[in-house]
Image (cartoon, rainbow, N blue to C red; front, side):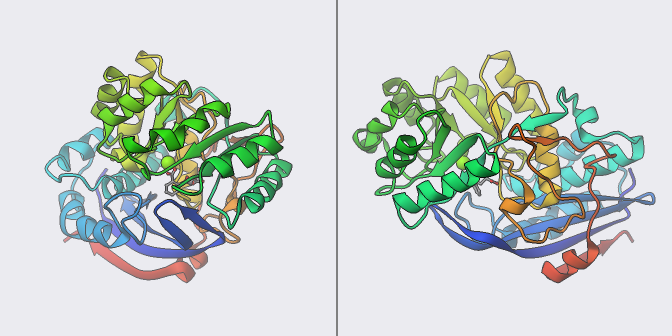
Length: 370
Ligand code: OSB
Ligand code: MG
């Protein structure tokens, strides 16, 4: 595919409600939308870097820098065959997975449009709809968290994840568990604890949770092994798994029993698929994480989650959980069985609301081949 032009839109969209994690509180969500023109087709990708380096070290600012100064020059005017070809080209750029993954997503959209195949078909997905849950941020109090969970359960979500941080952990999780004894419930600490906190976290093990997500630091795969040995609840790694190799390390070290797959964090959908395959070969269940995506990234996540080893519900909620207005014309809705249907159109299977994209863009940069 000859890359004729690349456009970067730095986007900021208001969230329907603030999202608070152990690393901060977001009222708006920023990301970078990547538009690639190739041989008369247009492909879209979403780089899930955020304004602040809270989830990982990347930000919308670093992503725009890496895209503009390093990634785009490697593909502009070039014939990029597929995702593997793209990964070979960016091999010399260390890190910056979120930036790379945004471009790879747009290339997959183009590939699908060229071959008239959906991403699900290109990936070898096996289901028409994927099981989903909702990720609830830290609320003002345990009782307001219970109310928020009740609200989402009433909307049809059958799996709930709550964010925890030191001082807002056992009481919050216990309150939700008490109100909903049979709920599929899990917690996410976003790296807020160290091994010294085992005593604090231990009561979580009695709450019949599906999993405990990323309790320790990103570079603490070995400490997660020590923690997992003390817990009967599966530990799930998110931030720690930055490549398919990391998944293998975590499995060999018995650092977790579940892995959260985010194509962005892993450096691209191709890397997400490879991670899925490694986990599948090792009988380790995976699920699809989320980064509050727009309709573009949401379509990509849903397609990825159609692969066979995505056996736990994903953090892929309906569009109205995040945005009153989205930048895709399509909005994703929750089916009665707590699933979302996999897009069937070519590529990502979504179309862009150009007016909304313009409205939410803080800046736009265009790069044309010479
Ligand atoms: O750790 O899973 C996470 C959102 C932003 C950054 C990190 C995470 C999250 C979520 C939200 O939990 C998942 C979603 O609904 O998109
Ligand atoms: Mg997480």
